[in-house]
Image (cartoon, one colour):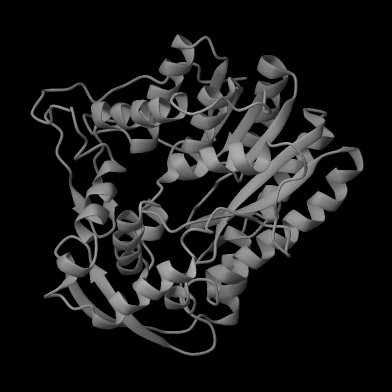
Length: 398
């Protein structure tokens, strides 16, 4: 079949296997062009198929020569439909890891379940023995509690009062006002259940009880703070409550792990085009302005550059990892520079549908959105007739 992008809102319902593989290869080539990282040897990435999780796995494998296990919930091709982008990404990663002589395998399923946790523990025992690094990069709209069976859904809403600001349809560049009603107390609590630190800690507790963590294990989960422009909908909103819980969980686990030389961190990243960020009102418009400013200043980074900097300059350096007053690692430091935020704020005040392509990098945002699904990638023939059914090597099964 000839595979073309089909969109529904902030979702692309198709993915291109060759384009996804090319994206993975470009990330690998970037990491291989950088100095080697000394530190992680056996790495578990929970949420490993896209975005920061995928980039973390690539940096660990091709930057540090680590063996990796990736956990993700992506589906293959069914009845002539394309697989998900995460599936194609993971297939490409596994193939390249094999070529490089790196041990790797995939555990496919819902990371929130006890079954997948148990299956991952068996994979670690069989393939690696123990892991010294655990990356938690799960972003999901809902979660079923493995003990009670109750399902919770997250919301992206302000707290306390309705919120009005600008947003953009990044497909056509139309800038419009948007008003979002505040979250109820129950919605806030449910968002914390989905996006907070509860599942991360369940993973670490079960991995520790099974004896598959090294004594000096490092674990990291990812978060975002952002600028004043997005505070009401993000950090001061329902998702911000979940991120606060994530940070408290990190501190609690760090206190426990430090007794044997282990560490737990939340790493705060910069604003980027991801499937998750595309779903948040206001944020795509902000990121488009941010990209314009950071690219002009020569300090723009994508997922792979951010994750390389995290591993090479923060986690695995001589001495303690540099952290802020809340024990968070900050790789959003360039985004939040005063000069960057001042220019973004000036752009924001003047944005309209008529000048958006002049004042922002919306075209770059839109292109990166499609690249998440393997489209609009250089050196790919999008008129080629392809087989959508691609196999992932090294799927672990008990």
